[in-house]
Image 1: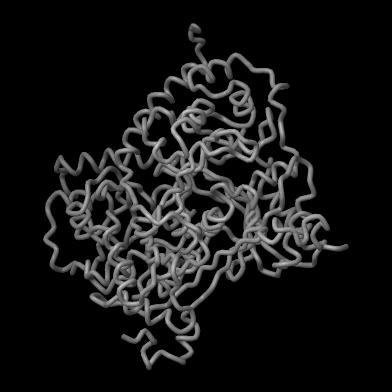
Image 2: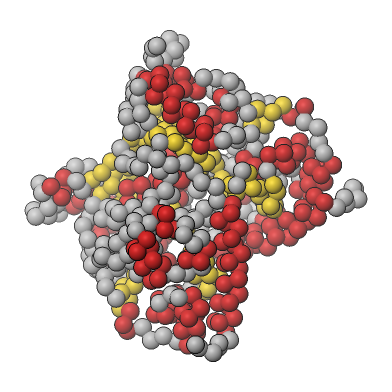
Length: 308
Length: 308
């Protein structure tokens, strides 16, 4: 059986364009301890084998941005308030971590991870002992409003941090991205976009990376109402480009590969402007209206209203 | 200023491995109308310029799987029940679409899209007229439980469908993925993994692609409790690999590029087994426990409990 293309498309201009390509290069920049010159590390690590090019998108893990910006807190020096103690008692989270979360954000709720699916996380674990130990260190996640953004534990992470320290999120991830982009341009003459990515909980129960800041790239495709293949305006076209980049890059930077916290994406066509907007207000109004209309629909489903 | 690597890493085995690479190839398979031989189209469209290789991951849009499987319903032939009429009245969704949604799934709630952020979607639209027209055609989204999976409108989409038809999700996306994988192996001798992707609403207000079925690849990284860079077991490592692949592929298949519904991902190391599990039960128990524990934490935050 032949697998060659139809004669009518082979060699046509349409066929030439039928394969588009996007490449993700994971870059190992070594292990950071805090205060490093991240731009220098990125330029050094990419200069030989890859070389940065104009229009590349750099997806950078928030962890290394935080470390470079020395957003590192010594846990021993954190005085724990009574409020933090009480939340720690109920949730099982390290009281010092709770204290930092309360300083950085507003607590909206708690996801009792260890309690939700007993036995389920073990099936995704390297071993049941390791699962038990990890869950004991962090049995719950606090849902927080951090600078207008919904995230867990205010983005504070004790893993992959030097011993007895916590790493806070970059104070202003859009600004961090802008600075990285500017400095890369100044030092190398290359015009790249930067997306800062952070790992977050998915509603499906695992985690994916999302974008928390960006510069030089519009994080959202503004094609709402664009016509579909059949010429009708459609609900859609608000693709979260920056989130898709973060998720795609996590295939290289995630997993056990925390040493490749920079991923260079080459081949993407994108709009050059924009930063990540906050989402908390949208979510707040969205949840309230969704609740109201859901009650209305569930009533309508079973109780006939009088038609207008 | 030099951008060459440090002398101590240049040429070392560590440096050689410091850049890893993943390539996404978008494949235009042409416009489907229903009942096509999808495997043949994929093999034809990739044979010249790309060629499928063992261990490639094919991310395939659910829409073309549905069309190939002829999951197409003529809207004119759909008799609308009173229940569907009432929900359509309250939500503004086409009664025939509501009827199909009720047949395919259980309605859990409604997101009143047009109402949540007046003016906001317009800023992401190609034009305010197009936005108004799109919102008029679909002012709300029903949140549904479709075969144990949370999704909007039971995954039924009227866009990119032939006129006056609706496209249903593949009846069993894991099985569809398995069949695609099998047939590709039989006809080309190539051993690929298949992920079936669908566009879904993000809690941030836009959309990203997620995986609804897969074959030949474990959709979840089972590294929960793996030690971090500092040797401590960490909460994490349950990366949703298949979702990350779907999101990354959407950069090529999404946007206006509905004609590239197949993306070949090359270079990923993955575990060969697994399918997408349902998430509705996990979410149900998760929401309930999260609500209970949130009340407890909010109480603890402000009212001192007696310590044990």
